[in-house]
Image 1 (tube, rainbow, N blue to C red):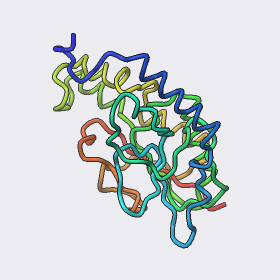
Image 2 (cartoon, one colour):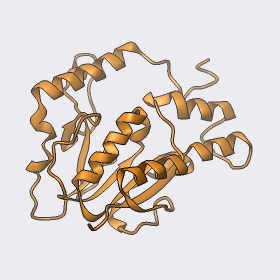
Image 3 (cartoon, rainbow, N blue to C red):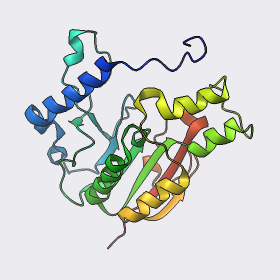
Image 4 (cartoon, rainbow, N blue to C red):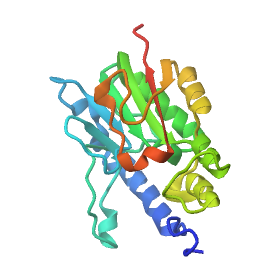
Length: 227
């Protein structure tokens, strides 16, 4: 099966166990690492929530706790987030202090109720009038690929694309424009619209997409109302 779907490894209990253990240790012993309020407010604060390896100057990179447990079984070579937290929990951040938020390919790693709570937190911490730019794997594009309407070059098989969307990299939810727009609207965002990957956006600073994700990605921007 690995020869058929080389990009989709078998899930390992070890990975889930250490992820949850990292979260528990972080929440109970390293909560200060999640303190966004410590960021100096002398210049605009832009959060990248679920930053992964997408590092860029001028941003505060926020991601899950990395309590270095992985050093016991392999060398960690990734970036350390500026802020380490559990994205399933409320952000350690005051209301109305963030100038903009970007989040790329993060929501699909959260169950729907967790993702909705994260969107609520984004709304809470943004300044009135500030923008959220969010992208996810696009269910519609994958279905269009499956039905032969478009090409997605990094998938060899149509079913592979479905499996990648729903099972790979710890994905536990799927999104399209309709669902993400509805969630943002319920949270309270306004001026919600789909924008072009990597080029279009009301706040150009928030454009932070990674090029290799272009073919499969939906990008939405939304504004917190001024009042």
